[in-house]
Amino acid sequence: MLQTPLSSKHHIIAILRGIKPEEIEGVCDALVEAGIGRIEITLNSPTPLKSIKKAAELFGGQVLIGAGTVLSMSDVDNVADAGARFVVSPDTKPEVIKRTQERNMASYPGVFTPTEAFCALGAGATGLKFFPGELIGPAGIRAMRAVLPPETPIYAVGGASPDNFADYFAAGCTGFGLGSFLYKAGRKPEKVLARAREAVKAYDIKSEESRTG
Image (tube, rainbow, N blue to C red; front, side):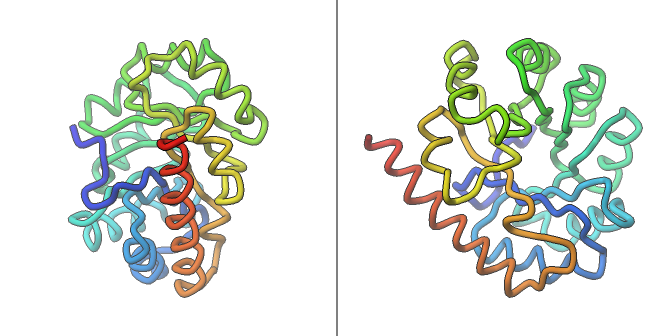
């Protein structure tokens, strides 16, 4: 199972919520150019399966294309058939995680408590999405990171931005899911590119600072 980006060292998931199929080429091209290695298209977007399929066909050889807001086993099957390589959910459902693994995709369920985190890992999750990140906060993530298996990839989603990358890295985060910071419905590719470059630059600087102390 592929669990890392094909061409990026940056653990940033670009969350495209509300994107339309006709926007896919321009927006995804901007993200790829900036160095984003994972692109998530949420299922509460207009015709999301069409967008996932198009993104996978155009960019699947360069980055990982995934699906977000995946809530059921039928959702898992639909996004797998459309070409998704990873699944992100806002909640923890063992049956969804197991089905994701059966379809040979990486699984990143949403967790808020230690109980949910260990339930997700027990079901076979590839990594954990701490959501909503602004409510858990770096202090809460740090406390949970202390008891999680050290190799577990964890992502702060909801409230993470270049302004607070350093706090989340210090708490033990592997990376981030960025939604409205990068993309809002209708945002032009030029603006997405500028935001994505800002995020990648901040990631590089803050991750290096976290390693060197």
